[in-house]
Amino acid sequence: MSAIVEPTCQIYEGWEEFYHGDTDDKKDCFLAEGKLFDIIFAQQFNRPFLDYICNLANQIRRMAKTKMGSQKLRSLLAHKRAMLYFVQPSTRTFLSFQNACHILGLKVSETRETSTSSEVKGESQEDTIRTFASYVNLIIVRHPEAGFAEKTAWVLNQTDRPVPVINGGSGPDQHPTQAMLDIYTLERSFKHIGGLDGKKIAMVGDLKRGRTVRSLSYLMKNYRDVTLYFVSPQIFRMKDDIKAFLNKHGIKFYESDDFRSIMPEADAIYMTRIQQEYADDPSGEIDAYPDFHFKKEHLGIIKPHCTIMHPLPRRYEIDVAVDKDPRAAYWRQERNGMWLRAALIAYIFGVEKEIGTEFL
Ligand code: MLT
Image (cartoon, rainbow, N blue to C red):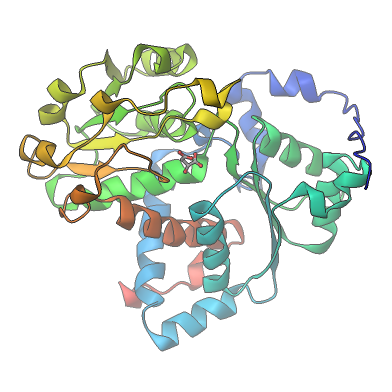
């Protein structure tokens, strides 16, 4: 039987101060030559950037549908390699990043378990990441700890091989690329009714520990006159840091525990599951809150254009009978993630100019 070796704990001078600093002051650290280099938190994105990436994702999805277009896309980054370091379980984020890399021709390596890396010998996480950077040109990280992707990027940016880092989900904290794909889905759903500006979005479920709703809330500062409804059981209310951010940026929000009364108001309903994996004792926590579930009978009371979203995986939050309704967007939403992430990677490597508008 092998012994479990404690991870080596290395002290990086300046990290703690940086991590607890103001987000606006940190942004420059993740830029290179005036553009985004590392994708770490949702506050890095402004409206022109979001519009640009959504448009690029549209171009890539059209181009990928023809043989000639997909061959051209695969040639764009055939000389690059990516590492998917996903040590927190993932289905969609992993597969959509992996397939986004394939679309652009990147070769992909993966680690999904620290038990198969030298971390079992006690190697520090930071040294493990530096090792990846020796072999690849891009690192995509999913980790159960808040701040892990940020530390990865910060550490690498001080070495002589600073490869870009994308945060594929950091604990209950941030999921910036999920927020981008959610914006992409919302903008596509509202294409014929003026886009996301002026819309009312209900976010429902575990808002306290759900990183998707946190990151998406940050992005709302880029849209005009949006109203948010935070609908949750009392114990899972949105945290104060997000509410302070919304107040600072003049974004209207209301809190409620009466989901049914909010349903007819919303242009989009964003469902989330209870994040039991972050509970101290998951077995001691109730996982079903039926008053915060979307059921087939609710289809009759929501707006004709209301978009029903969910980052998935779902538990009991949305009845499968809802899936057939054209307003159920969650399966489209997960596929949108692949196109959006391909666009983001193309942007990071600066090959977007080679993506043709003739396919639009
Ligand atoms: C996430 O990674 O946060 C998921 O997509 C949403 C969830 O796990 O509930």
